[in-house]
Length: 340
Image (cartoon, rainbow, N blue to C red; front, side, top):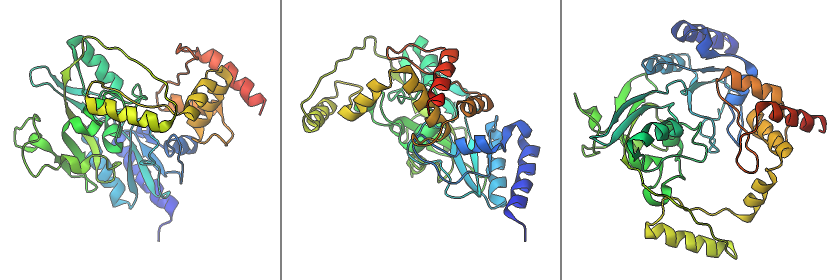
């Protein structure tokens, strides 16, 4: 009977043969970070893979299943749903961020098809010169949060007051099942079909939305577009209590006048204002990146290692929204750590 480590090594060898050594993550510290979301952590996955070509994903998923490991799809890693935190160590995280191509952008059909690792910001930037936009156009973390993750975990915020969640604009999907089979939903499922309306039934698109990746690994998403507003503005109000704020929010939502409408509760607002202090912000950032928990010891060097390994940027803003240089952040974090 083979041991867990033997099974892991065998699977790792097969995945390296398929994807290359640089696409298979075995570093325990990086695996720990990939196994953690903004708030939750659990067992650390045995391995992680970062496919560059969506054509490799079916074989990757098939190999993982054949060796008895669980498949955990992961996007930008900025969720707080627990949707990609492993339940057990015999798991492999499939990091889809390298699948970051916009496949089709049709101004005439008003649709866009993207790979699962494309970010909301990437789409916004591509559409802006054309005067187009997604109805729901991203989360607060949309600079790094991915479309695949949003479709899997119920992304809300920018545009939600009028247009709903990310899933409400999905026209079709390409999904890799646990067997490695590829399923297409919507009108693209027809031979020579093109996603346009979700008119052909039974419509399976909704089956794979908000599933946290449990029913399959999304590799392609087609969404509808709208004309971008020519003018935007904002207003804010203060309410005596949460009941009044909730009532006002509901009235605004029913009116259809606003694209975005949300309430910040007093405690969250106080915490955000406290975060304008550079040292507090930097220390909190390091802890979240490394552990996802504010009560554990942070390691800024590990955070930097994580960002380098996964080719992402760590950005800290001051209280006025200006980016702070990495040098100043490192100095502030070092000062913070020395006081612990």
